[in-house]
Length: 517
View: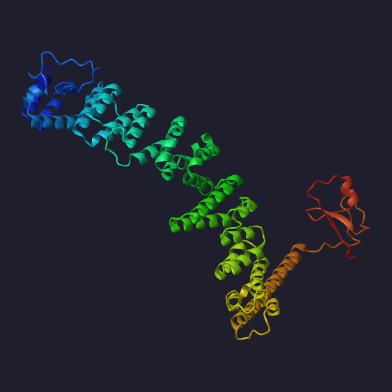
């Protein structure tokens, strides 16, 4: 013990001379109670600490001010040393029994020096005393760090209140420039529903598209168990962009198959588009983005109320959307008429036939293409654009048409040369179809032959019955062609087999034509 005390005293002598490396080794070798060192620094030990300095004392200094004689540069060096030393020993045996004193002192040093490790200390496991640490952080205006301290101690409400005050500018703390986004992320993973609802209005008022993430990015399990989507939608009524984002989350990400959500989202897209179109400001990019989203939803979803959306679109210039809706109603002629005559978008008309016939049979696909051809041909035949569209349709999609029907529809004035690509394609398709049919027929015949062979093969060797053979049971000859055959080859009358209750291994046979000699 005396030897350790000498080492500790030597350590303080080296410390007073700012020989920190030597002092640290002596403190370690002498197993110094680190609180002896902390007590030299005014106000670092918690007020609740029960520490009393060693007696007789290990050094002659009352505190750091006396040791450094007020030299600020020396004081800064001493504080840096203590920061480093405490950080090293806090996770070792040296800290056992007084981790609260060590971590609280370390927090105070970090806060005073504006050290970046302050936040690392607070977000990891620590033993900082709440009362002492909170007062110190507030004194040094470390409000964000104070919020982390509150959070670590389970006081999320106090933490959020501080952070909101920082974002609102009520108190100053420049620790994080992205504190609003941090609060949103914090609320996203906060399990206290009351806190989430309390601050939902605040985050949405600041930025509704970012704020809605407190609902859309919550863990899926919690969304399904603890939050009613209808309550959130009601909360978002004042925030149209956030409401759209949330419904997109329900419909497109979570893929909830509920008519009301799909219809609501389509209606909100439509409402936003019409509002942008009626405005004076140039929002072309936003309008196009919403139009693409609306079209995608109308095409891919089968859950929204078609007539409801169609009624809202009537009287507007949203012709493409009208065509999609008529397609959903299987009113393809109306849809194609809009695409051809209202929009004059022949490429879109062809695309319409393609995506509307996805996962349908060939006849359905052909019917759509024939409808489109009829729309082209039954219009004013003097319209060169429609004539060329019809020719291009036939020449580019020859496989989608019944050549015989097409030749009945096209005007007699059309030359063979005009339709030569179509006719060539139709001929190739016809030959291909014929050959494929022949191949299929040949394969079917071969398969049938295999089945016949297997049938003959499984008939096995015939059983011969003559007047010389007798029943193994009654020893009488067979007078009828019906008999029962044993697995070992023996034969008996059917009535003999029944009377003897033969076991299930007996197999009945019937011989229509036995050979008699």
